[in-house]
Length: 95
Length: 485
Image (tube, rainbow over all chains, first blue to last red; front, side, top):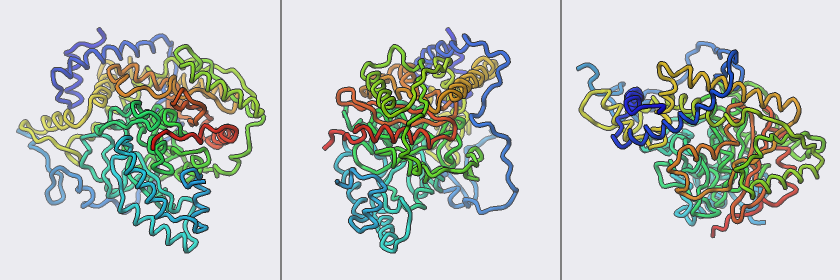
């Protein structure tokens, strides 16, 4: 086994996904199969190979720090599940 | 010649000559959608009223001799593009109530050039899929055979064209999501070089792989559309500031003397005989046109799918962290404070495939596994990219199949994620390498289209379009129409 049910439950918590028991069962098998498949990368010796994070060689992209028109409060909040005045409203954070 | 068989350039001439109007073209597309989309399901939103209003405005411009090459042309875009004031759901329940507050740059460019938005196209949820069956909406049906998938994730973008519902569409391609559906639906699809087209306002899946591109009825239309959307955008710091050539100039220059490489790793067992035969016939067409055919090797091809599913899922797990029920999307109301709200919102809002990829990606990035999975995959990505760069020292472009088979049946691969992933085996390496490729129709497997892939050097879209045009001019595959009345 590449991954245990307990590890899947842990990853679900990291992913902020409240999964059903049946989903955890299915994912344990599927992730095990997929992790088994990606093992094939270990056939390759990658000692000293520089990792590619980005397909196009790129340095930091700097721009002038200028104030420009932005999306505005009304449009920024238009899709909020709950908002009040100029804020997004969320459930209580500190018990 | 009916308007449905005309290129965009010919249509534009007809509009300018007063032989048709944008309102007439737009109305015909809307009628076609009404007549066929109950079966095809390519559209998730149809913008009847705004399309006709925009068409009337385009007609005024045309009458005044104003506007550009896209003025009055009805198009549609994948529901992954933010389109201001229009619902943008990305194939997901979690965004089913989301109205875009602004426009994606690629779409804005088309609109500024006068194109008419017919509506938004169905897709796999968050562009994760190869069959469109991962859409929170009902899946798209392939117009060539309604029991088969259109491919994915830009399945709606390809099927809308095959069904004659639009003159061109936009899609996105992270591991083949433009080229594979283009192949399955018998249309042309271009995945430009990473950085060629702005990703601003395009809902992100895997940011180092995602790229916007056009799907069209023929090569010339695809070239025209690419020219319309390409270029540096200050709002996307990964778009590349290099000149955009006129893709129509030189399109007809032919392939005489061009060196075309055949990567031997793409002509393997498991390649469907009908696909193999169609691609081999295409090679002979190119030989006949004076191209030089060269055998080449991309030795790390077999590792691309594994590499992709680590990198893409890792990036996805990070990108999709934003869907937390706070700023947009559907929130689940639960007891249990903020974390409980996050967990229930995400569990209820995402479909199975999206959850699977978030889980795999989170695992690959998690403490203790990062080096073994994510970093390892990034190193293998370097090897895959170098394969291409070495091959391009020998040849001008590469020719391969797009997918191992023609369109498969709905439901055929839904129970086996790995088999589904392997249907992208010939398209994924191009995204990892970050270069450009296109798909164009090159034959039939019974009643189903087969696609040919041409892979170009970075930022050399003009050459693969030129080679595609040479093939299209010699053959009639692009003129075939899906048997959908």
